[in-house]
Image (cartoon, rainbow, N blue to C red; front, side, top):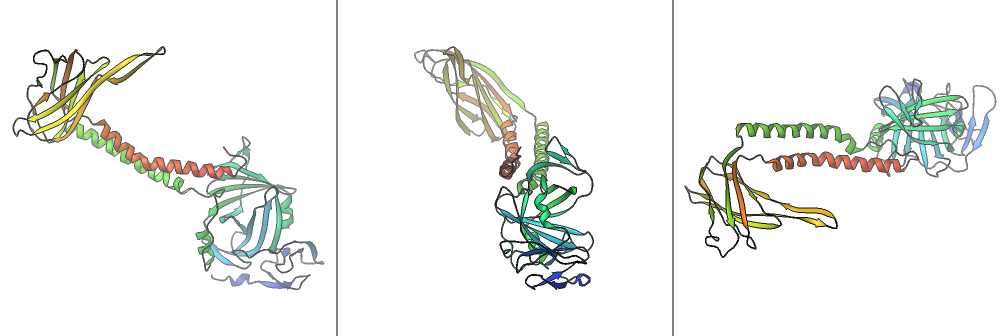
Length: 421
């Protein structure tokens, strides 16, 4: 990484173990932590060194070291201090890297379970609304966490007394991938804004020789990949669905639905009567294809059924199309409640029927001795609502999958919060 020579470090010795401690900004920094003996002390321009505390354990090796340089959001940064903290009521720690910059003062790079975020001071005055939300000029943040922290270790230089962080009441409000933090202490209230960073972004920013570990679980402001895709996918799916509807409408305008045949016939299911086994032969009708054809049946069945094998005959070529439809309808009262099943009508859709002169042969059959009325309708270019609905369903599948994935992701995120919606 390029080195900012104007901010080259000086050094002085630790007052306890004499280990050299680098100083990057001694005009601003007065608090220091020794990585060798774990001593944390105050060292001002004048006066003796004030030893504040000695941390009980050494800070384990961290992904970034004091002095590491990089570029975050195109701006040069240098790690000048590292703080290890945890919440008072939870044992899991996190790391905060104090970043020195050229233009905009200090920032903090925070890492918890492999999730990273850059935190900067926020300008303006914010107010908590309805006990849970905070709104700025860009977005609304929802309360995610309130806690007090404990400082476990501190190495490097700091422009404030990091031990005072244990006295802060901290509230965090999220609008992934953004976070708004309120810190209330004896000196007043301060606000900070943070944005999520992936391990890959941090690896690239600091030119690390190997990738950082993958995050564990769902981060407080980790963006959902499904949520990021949803607006674009929904926009495309909506336009595609509209296009399908428009095409269907244009198709029906160019090739309108047309009734070619509409006739009723009577038939007796009593096989002992003369002619009961004879087929019903319709009059012929002209069909202009190739196109879809709908053959609709309606029968006055009542707690009964009628099965109708049908032959569509092309009188010119002799080609036959065979199929069977069943019309059945039952109803009654069971335990004081009425019920019904089936319907008195059915239809068959035949696709890509060629042009020609056609007629139908119907071979109805049923049980018992009943007289039926069978109404037959033939329609050219029927409106195939099922095809339209199927296309719309297929278009909607991916947006629905993304919606489910995002909701599962958000549910897991809020499982870690005491303020879940």
